[in-house]
Image 1 (tube, rainbow, N blue to C red):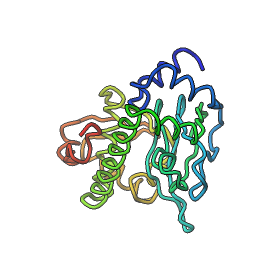
Image 2 (tube, rainbow, N blue to C red):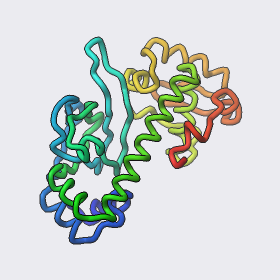
Image 3 (cartoon, rainbow, N blue to C red):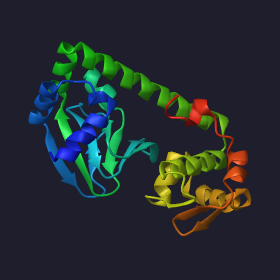
Image 4 (cartoon, rainbow, N blue to C red):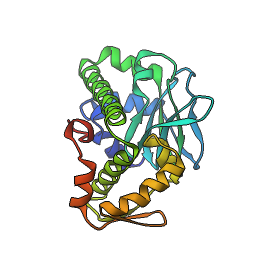
Amino acid sequence: MRHHEISGLRSLPLFSEISDDSLNQLLAAALLQQFPAGVVLIHEGEPADFLHVLVEGLVEIYSDHGSGESGITLLKPVSTFILAAVVSDQPYLNSARTLVESRILMIPARHFRHLFDKDLVFARIVAQQLAFAYRGSIKKLKGYMARSSMERLANWILAEAKLQKGSTNFVIPFDRGTLASHIGTTRENLSRSLALLADHGIRIRGREIVIDDKDKLEMFAKPQSLIDDPSS
């Protein structure tokens, strides 16, 4: 791996406190691969053979339920997936695919579990990351239960703008069908919601979203720390 990519791994809480020797052992057994957009990396129901680390690109975690797909989450670098299946040595509950060209580090699950069994500090960090992932799932469920699809879209726009360092305009980094799936609606309803949000401080220019009045958008979205704050 390149030096800055190893530094990126160290920025992950999961790998921030393990020793250089332990990290080198994991990397020695790992595969770093480049994948084009649209490659399915994980199929739900299959054994968890690898812990995947997104180094560059964009990955979608989703579920295929026969009649269609449901978006679970969208991952940006540097992040891991799907940790719970690897730790518990159970089949993947979700699938994963690249949305753009991506570099993925694949750490064999058996090497990861070996380090988990022998390194108490590492095991504690893994437990923390599993707890954060659980809390994230509960927050998303609360959002589905408490909000309309239009409110979920408004909060997604606010969150994405925050990721763009508070920018008042940004480009949706994937197609509208993917966005619709991840806020729990249809593509048609998404288009209607985007049009209706024009009354709440935004404009749409193709795939670009322009926030003209953030205060007005927040008044409609009503973001809550126990749903929308990833650090809580």
